[in-house]
Amino acid sequence: MVKLNKIYTRTGDDGTTGLGTGERRLKSDLRVDAYGTVDEANACIGMARVHTAQTYQAIDAMLSRIQNDLFDLGADLAVPDDGKPLGYEPLRIIAAQTGRIEKDIDLLNKDLQPLRSFVLNGGTPAAAALHLARTVARRAERLMVALAQDPREHVNRDALRYINRVSDFLFVAARAVNDNGNADVLWVPGKNR
Image 1: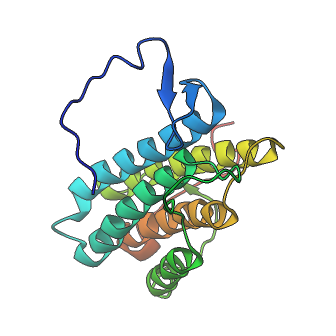
Image 2: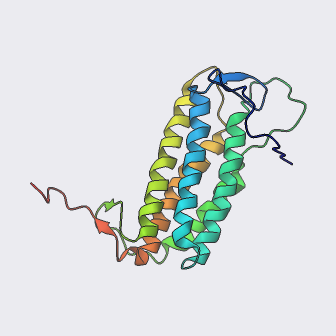
Image 3: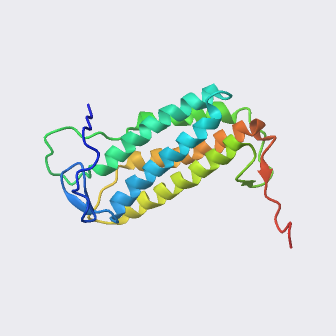
C-alpha cells in the first residue's frame, strides 16, 4: 500500500528524482521522461472522462481501468529490470492487460462506420479530449521505444505492447463518442490550396 504523508521532500531540488530501485536520475533522464509522459497521458484521460462520465458509461469504465493500468505502467518504468535483487517483486505490465484493451477495442469497433479518410482531431468535446490523450500516449510510446534502444536500459516488452494498444483504444473511443464515426471530422487532402 502506498502511503504519502509528506508531499515535498526537497530531495528533488537538485534536479534529480529517485527510481523505485533507489537510484537517483536527472529529471530530464529518458526513463523519467517516459514515465512522466505516461502520467501526462493519464491526466489527459482524466480530462476526457469529464466528458464521458455521464453520457458514455461503458467507455468511461474502460477509461477508468486504463487509468489504473497507466499507474501500473509508470511503476513498471520506474523500476528498471537491471538484474539486481530488489527485495520485492516489482509491478510489471502483463499480457492480460493488453488483451483486455483489445477486447474493448473490438467491442467499440464493431459499431463504427468504416473510415473513408484520416480523421482530424475533433468532433464532440469528448472525442477531442480522447484524441489529445491519444497523441500524448503516442509520445509516451515513442519515448519508451527510444529508451528500449539504449543497451544499458530495459523496457518490458508487454509494457510497449500495452502503451501501443492504449493509443489504439483512444482512437476507437474517440470515434465511438463521435456518433460511432458519423460525426468524425475527416481530412480533405488539399482542401485549402
